[in-house]
Length: 237
Image (cartoon, rainbow, N blue to C red; front, side):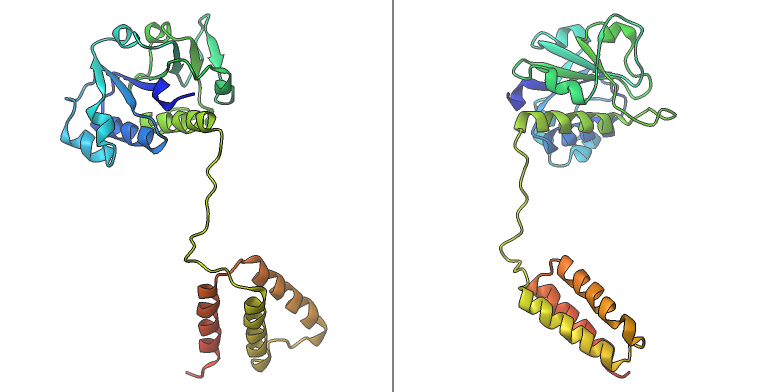
């Protein structure tokens, strides 16, 4: 499986902003092959480049075609996205079923224009139609949002291995002893403020407070901040 095998096709996009945002969304998930079919705005233009933010390289290598058929000469599998099912003899596929597509082949995802989506004529070129699950009473998704959802799903299928986020080495996790000292400092201040008025409930209250403190996974810096806060609360104005 290869990110280079995947292309995204925008059919007659109407807004410069959406073209730029689609390029940005593609790059967010490691894709770079963008194709435009008869775009309404001049391509490229300043608004497209501005909204693409750091995806200028995607814009620069984007290919523009006058019609859909010419754009498919390097596509093995075409998936057409649509907010509605078509009364046509074509395979419908869900987001979860995208894993059944052979991503070793050259796969392209086709998105319709903002105003009218894809016509039956454009859909007739597709191997599959894909409908993104959404509110049945409001299915219309922004073009760039639709692309990002598909790009994220395909990226996960290609990568397989999820990214493991690691805590910065600059952040030192507080030790149990440090948390215990903070808790005891807090309890001492509460005692001085006569917080535990009902002695019968004091043990369970302390138990609950201990549970809260230990579940927070505090860092050493956060321990120091909270210590200063608790100390400040006991000072007389």
